[in-house]
Image (cartoon, rainbow, N blue to C red):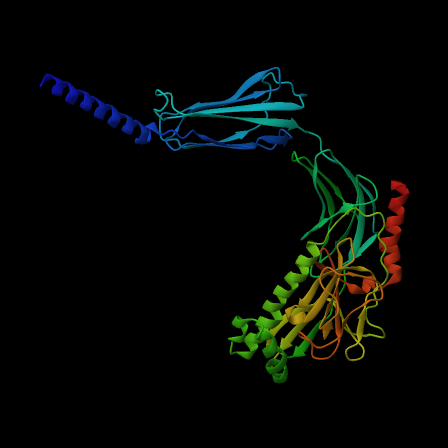
Amino acid sequence: MKLKLMLLFFVLILLALGGGAAYVYTAPEFEQNPPTITAPKNVIWNGKTPIFITLQDDTGIKSYEMIVSDGKTQVSVAKGKFQEGVKRVDLNLTYPKNDGLDLRSPKLKVMISVNDQSKWNMLKGNSATQIIDISMDIRRPTLSIISNSYMIMQGGSALVILKAEDTNLKELYIQTPKHKFKLQPYRKKGYYAGLIAWEFTQEDFSAKAVAKDEAGNIATSSLTFHLKNIPYKTSTIEAKDRFLDGKIADLAEIEPEYSQETDRLKKLKLVNETMRLKNEEIIYNAGTNAEMPMIQLWKIKPFFPLKNGATIGGFGDKRHYYHGDKNNIVSTSYHVGYDFASTQNAEIKLSNPGKVVYADMNGIYGNMPMIDHGMGLLTLYGHCSEILVNVGDEVVEGQVIAKTGTTGLALGDHLHFGITVQGVEVRPVEWLDPHWIKVTINDIFADADKVIGK
């Protein structure tokens, strides 16, 4: 009997210990997950932009400390203790001033430690540590303009060549009111060239070069151009029933949401405006995704895509479509290319070599190949009856790439010829003019080459 009591007592003790162990392992206050520290492990820092650090824990943060070391001296820059309930702490590390650190030290080390409120680990709780290795960089990139085009016209293009140097250079571009234009390496390390554009719908224009490094240091340099505004044409076009029931109805079938619209004038607006914007986005994306490798030389000849082609439509025309009464404007759009007409199904020949980046149907533009000629300059050829090249093809001067037609929003056989600079539609007339190319492009390269050398 005594033995049975002892065995029963022993079993009860085991059950109690097991229950206690189970409670310790499952109770929220005994959770075993260490706190998390969200912070970069390696940083190039200018000491001005804060480094953001986040501490988190399921049960709550009990304490934390952040120590900065320059290799000789350690400084506690932040610490805190909490009673309960604080599950997240956001810290902004700024450069500790007047705390004994060597301001000239190129390297810093940040040590972050945090403890939680858990009763695990003999009531000591869980802990986590992380180290951030910092390379100091307080110098701005060096930036200087070597040469740039004298003039830029509203809707036109220009060339910029500059020098930018920084060990940790991250980003280099020309900032205009609406766009960032990338630059590509030119001839030697530290030199860059890029085409820029003044969007034709913008009355004012300015441009500055911007260089940013990994540490967040920024250098800028304003560019000086002689600016010339262009009075673009405005025209009024009648949307006849034959046009609405023909071209517009056919194009609306491309998109199910357009084809379901029964109101002919609303359908015109959908095709002429909404679809047009989607088509132009494809053109813009092709331009902004253009490759920008280092170049040693960039030469461009005037474009003459259609032999004996007559100009029948200008760039930048604002077209108001009316139905019935001239005051009844039902849709408005811009024409962002040159229209050339020759013979039916005329051959479209390349004036400059390049690479095919698009060759497909593109809504109102119809069958449309696009060619990348380098430096972010792309040409497009709309309304083609057939496309004779494929995406990825390397094409050469004189090659027939397509034939004119009436696909897309074209009422007669013709070529819609467009040019973009990094996706921005620009005046083709400039790139048709040998004198403009000489003074705006070739002479600028020649001037810069005198500075850069061989």
